[in-house]
Image (cartoon, rainbow, N blue to C red; front, side):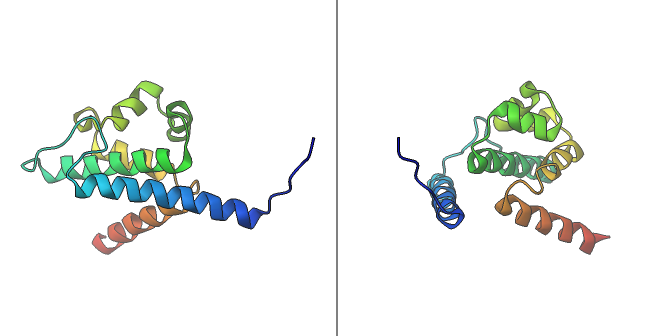
Length: 129
């Protein structure tokens, strides 16, 4: 049995390619008007529901980028798997905005794309304060 040595650089390059493909797939679907969640949101929805919907999408993106299971994501966010499923289906009416923000912030440090988005959110809140 041969053992092949793979460099960390090559692994990072492969991981980056996969992430770019996932991001591209999501962008393509959104450009075509498709929704990546099970439930959409009305254009007439209030701003809070739109923010909750966007947070759900960020958590879905995290799940796809990291290729984690719903249970693994639930464990990271400190909630039940059934609640994670509700997030994955964008059931925004079942969550408060602060709960979704809290769940999203727990993902910090687990993926660089999500870390950048979390930093943007934190900076936005600092500007308000």
